[in-house]
Image (cartoon, rainbow, N blue to C red; front, side, top):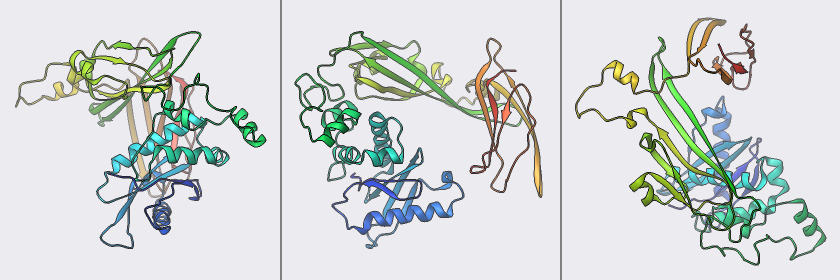
Length: 378
């Protein structure tokens, strides 16, 4: 399942950088740019553009599609054809955005234009001529493509060579037997940090009952360990995790047998694993064929940490809404609470009265009215 190539567009739908597309005619990437431009022009919002756009080609027997994602004002296009799974292209696009973030920090059009040579080298190393992802580990890429810095810029302008290479203690690229970890890493203080973040997505009925809820979790890590450390991370309630996805450093056989994470971590920032939390999976499943009552089904859902009551009235030339929010937490307040109300495509403005020290605003580009405060507890 090869990927035909990659195109990066700025906010004006102008190409910033793209792969060579050696296997196609010069008009092939232009067809996909025109298809995305036409879809963006007909959509009211960027969110309304289909993530996969059909692109007719000169040969009716070989149509193609344009997969795209948005990131910080940039649009990344990935043309695919034949029987390539679009999810394959989306996974590569997300991985390439993470690589750009590792190299440049803030991924913007000016940053990519200022470091065009580095971006093009990354395209050549991450995607081979056949359209297959090649080297996507940031630690391995740093040994091949030197990250930009003020020193490397000065040396390149001055024409000095041999002084701006990566410090790997005499080891070249791919010197480490572990593809995701560099060889010869040394730190004065050895430490590793883990950050667990979870996102709750729920559908609540008019009466406040949770109809459906899903918790998506992610474990990010920042490793500053010398040598080749071998770590073991024990989870207290691993049975509550479903559909996990792991970093390649995780030993899958060890996790399937004892539900522990055994791994040699990469150097620096990385995502250790992602998972879906379900309270029903932590309990014994009911017998097959046993129907769930409304109470049992509600108990199997993750409850939202606040209650929301809304009353709305829509007229021909506007409308009014009354929203009341109360926290379910008794021990502490909900921090950084922000609620967004989508007012519809015909909305031109809003006027709100809020309480509890909250603030409100209106974003015309999205027809959204955000309401909240840094510490919103009732």
